[in-house]
Length: 91
Image (cartoon, rainbow, N blue to C red):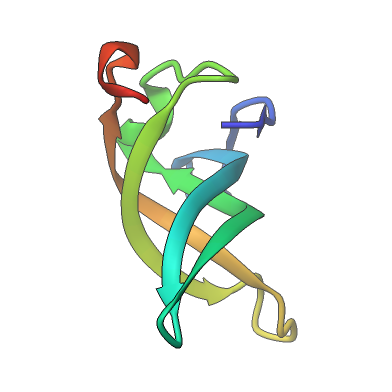
């Protein structure tokens, strides 16, 4: 996790946390290994937003991509599951 914005609430009173995730991996494309790195805008809604995430924490997330708003073509990941990665398991 690269950046975490302050917790806010939707007009309906639902907790919302905006974050920026950093992804780094190696993928195979056309039979060749490729290093992939990117940053992804994401949001966490509901009770999951209250879990006290900290910047720099290594996590695995699941969710879905959606447009930022009805009039936007920019994508944002909506996180609905977070798994914390133990630093002892990282190469």
